Image (cartoon, rainbow, N blue to C red; front, side, top):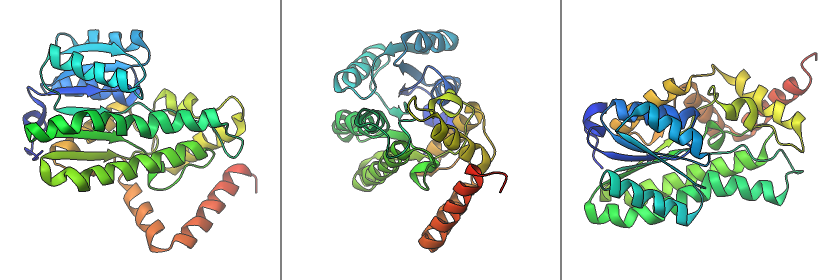
Amino acid sequence: MESTGTVDDTFAGRTAIVTGGGSGIGAALAHRLAEHGAQVLVADLDPATAAKVAAEIGPAAISASGDAADDAVIAQLITTAESSFGPVDFYFANAGIGGGAGLDSTDAQWSAALEINTLAHIRAARLLVPGWLERGRGYFVSTASAAGLLTQLGSAPYSVSKHAAVGFAEWLSITYGDKGIGVSCVCPMGVDTALLHEGMIPENNAEAGRLAITAVKSAGVVLSAEEVADTVLAGVAAGEFLILPHPEVLQMYRNKGSDYDRWIRGMRRFQAALENPAS
């Protein structure tokens, strides 16, 4: 999908689905999309939060609930959006979870992180892309994380699943970017949401979860969900693949690529400093 250059021109009259739309970045995206003229289906695992956001927005929004990693749920979201507003133009694969900690992460924690943080994106694209190819346009927005470019101290499942989300978004853009389909990958650091404050703490290893939270908060400023949403919509309007609400992530990523071993040593020192602040 070609960039139109302005946020209003990009989204006015379009139909968007936002998963994880009941709170945090998803709720902020839904509000901002409607403010710029889009019609929005707010999807969330929690039907009450999705309905609340849709009610706040008004007639330009409806809500739906279900597991955003479930093929049948995704298909129903698309059908509901189409019957209420028209063909889906934008899909914001925004739902996400923290997952487990380290090698003590259970198979269930690994599966849950990979399901919602990665496979949910693949399944949505599988259902949407054929229709977008026929129409000659469509736009997929993947909410990944700076952890998908760098890493996440204290959470192996989160880090690995977000790396996979970035990898899939790259492949999607390369494969379909010249066929009318736009792809953006959003990679923020700290955002003031429940995921940062609570969602990174697994029941079986609270200490590692607190390390993960401290690492994110120490790495840079914690942005509001609304600030991130504004950056995302501006990036989509500009047709940017990599959207970085924290611009400093780009330099971190460059440092990683320029000398991988040095970067890993630096991350080890950062982890040690967080684990032993007195030293």
